[in-house]
Image (cartoon, rainbow, N blue to C red):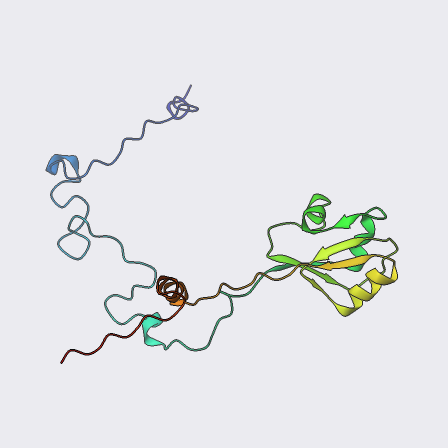
Length: 182
């Protein structure tokens, strides 16, 4: 037996570093924070990744330029006509049925059908967009294409409801203007 093998397989009990508990602890007085400085006081946080030590950081030195369409862009699932042969003759194909057959994985804003490949089955395909070639191939096989109508943007007439209420209050006529005081 050897003293190096005595603790083999035994988990060590590692104590938490207790700072600021007096000089005898080894972590007393400044509590491992050094002398003065930005991070010596309580509540100080480490600076972020973009912090450049007090000088103007790089993301503020360069001007903002250009435009990103990422906030408005829609992510469509893309399926080719050749992939639709996996369905039975006369089936209805939409996003849910494509996900069920694992042809499309993930979440998307809509479905686009493109014309690569050949279609041999009569299908009813519901999608947000069809290429001209895809539409022709589906209809040539005896199937039908159903276009999902896009979501209409809401009408932003801020005064519309108030104007209608006032008109209803005054018998369908606009509210009469007040005469100026003399």
